[in-house]
Image (cartoon, rainbow, N blue to C red; front, side, top):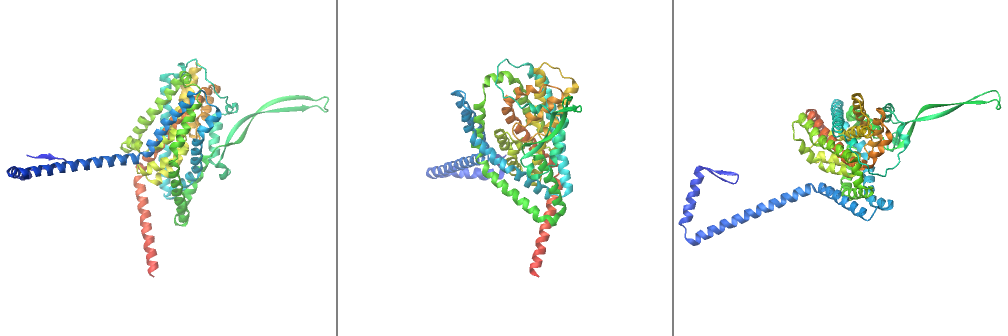
Length: 536
């Protein structure tokens, strides 16, 4: 027979030896037996101490690995408490809110300062290190994934809003809302799609760093003067609609992404001739990522004050929830299902890997996205999490993630579909199947053009409402809770980008391994040639 000792198994022959040693111990004098027992007790105590020390070291290691996640979550909780404490003394002044928000504003400024060099260096370095066929393959796979998940998010949101019917469950409370800019109503779906294409090819790259173009419809009045003299003159007035393209503040990320992809492809095609340029962008990207590592340690403090300022700014949370509470609930349920069920199922179906391991790996980035409500500002943290915690190839993350932060807006597509049908229900309007399909397609298309900055979804929401003839003035109902929903949908956008990087890595793993092996062989060949030249 055998019996276990920890993880080892003692055989019959070993057991006989043990029995013999036990009998021998029994035959020893009492003093020797007691000393043997004391020695055995000391060994047990030593092993217990070792186990206790190992468990403490394991806990300390886990805390160290997840320290930033713990700090960010703690900062969010403390921020809510601080915001409620500020509100307890009455409604704070705008000056107080500005001062509370100031440390968070500094965090956003630091991150926005790094966004352009990060996008430019990461895209160019990532594509330049791939051959053209690999870049084409990665691009097609990434865009196919992004379009699929965005359509799924939009359909899920529409199913939920038609089932829960939040527009018929609004309360009668009064809430104070900020008056909108009416000029935003003069837009059309076609105008927006043309703006997307127009912004893909900016006239000036420098200007694209801080401005983008948007089409406006303007009514112009024309007066026809008839008659030979001023005394006989009769005036006929006519009004004609015209289109004008205006510059507006905001980074044209789409134009920068298109240029960087084209530039990276050219560097890749030039091969050794452009090697110094490729090494420059790789080194620039590494330097930017190290700067990001410094900024991250300030982020818990910034997130704390960002959330505290938003909570303190809200008018009356009770009245607000009674008015649009079911709308918030519908969006929240949709985002939760999409993030923790739909996206993991898509990831598992393609890779046959545990999707929740990847969620654990990027949880820090999701927490950061909740605090900043900007997927572009979260981009460097997403890269670090995927590369260091999930083992995703740098060439994949630095190509797929910047593109995803620009065009992959699953949370925004879901939010816009729910918001449009909520407004229709609020006004007692029944939507036909054709209009519901139009909302789904328009929400998908509009989310692609949404900027990766806070509250960008509100502007594209107007396009969805206009497409099906819904009243755009009722969007003010959504503005009052957009600060909360923006913080909920941004982590879903970041998670969707992360799953996309994991799927593209899995589908292209053979090509990436082949490319890495070719680069290594080339490096070895160059080193040998240099050594031979030195010997000569």
